[in-house]
Amino acid sequence: MSVIKRFIAGAVCPRCAELDTLRMYRDEEREHRECVRCDFTDSMRLDGEPDPRELETRVNKAPKSEPVQAQPIKFFPNPSSKKH
Ligand SMILES: [Zn+2]
Image 1 (cartoon, rainbow, N blue to C red):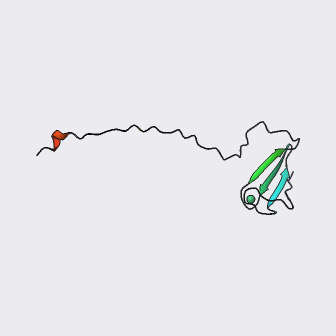
Image 2 (image 1 turned 30 degrees about the vertical axis):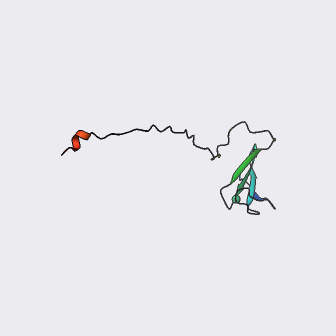
């Protein structure tokens, strides 16, 4: 069974803002959209239900960065070693 991908007339890619670059296709339970210009992909369930799962294609995971508390360290060189 081959997947038929059709261009969506008049659709604008939300990522690269190009017109008529979006294609759509369906599988058994989802409707997918993809852009042929950039690598944008999107999908929604055919029954309109919200997707309970996290999308696996989601790439905007921001790495958790914790503020680093810098402890000032005062370093005193041993004065006895520099005596001439
Ligand atoms: Zn695009």
